[in-house]
Image (cartoon, rainbow over all chains, first blue to last red; front, side, top):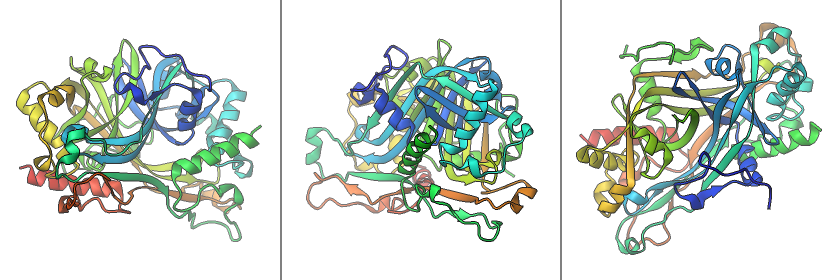
Length: 237
Length: 237
């Protein structure tokens, strides 16, 4: 049994509480299957829901954007935020409207988001912003310029509370409804990788290296990201 | 040129403003490609980011959940919310860290969310909650019970402001970087339908009807949802 996040009124799964998980293994494992998250934050009482790329280190989340974005300007002071990851795994057609549903896996993570300002921490974060997805890639890239580093803001948030919510059961109808002549099905949804499209302006002889092996055509994106994550943090030391 | 949403400090696309759109055709077209959204709202200064299924009618959005959920209890008073839809279309590997990116299509819609309490409006919304995704389906289902209707909350939000943001250009590097012997690619991401899985407990002779034709194996989910949407609102009259 792995460590768990504390549970209180903020992160307790109330609706369908049988679908809720708070242990690190489940929460972190789900976070590491994803590249895209949605971050919620508040400015002057107005909530914003912003999509962005993110990654995890231990119980800390990182995401990025331009220094000019309204989200980052606001969060640089240290603001409450909620970062959510969701995979839609199916649409579920049942025998009554009420039992129509979806299979999904989601995590909501709560904490105080702050701007990464320490130069050494920012430098390391800018490496992992690429290498978490594409292990060892930064070492082979054109080095970042001072201007580029300045123009990239990195946000970090220690997870105070979190919950995962998972539904994975397809059609579930009321017992008596199975006797009705009504069609019902689970309609699977998959997010997969297409064939890689090499840049048309590659220099002669430049080819795809073995580090990109996790990203093969037809594979589930969440599997590829999970494998890349394990490689990235194994080699990052 | 279609009508547009007004633009102000809340919804103006500031970062990469060349990627921003405010016209109804672009915003609504993107909303209709999706089943899943993330809704942001605030309780006691704490932002929440909740995934849910939603749909659009004109300039109004609807989403649902159990009456017990904390989001809906809060929004029933009429609360500022932000509903966001995002499609991740690719990961982009460039020749320097700064130009790593992603192709995506997203919409952020802002307004005041309120609980649907009028019985006639709620009844119609509960039909479209199913039929928007699966045209004509409700007519063939076991009728909803009073208890089920009571246990389902429907939230509605007139869109006050909205913006769409689209990146669809793959690898874009600085001019001088194309001369470097560095591999770069666009890694396409597709969200597709798997083969439908009929409920194992179907009554004999019950088969999939022609109304589910938009949902064929291998098809992009966003294409299927767009087609279903057009059929639903053509037949819903």
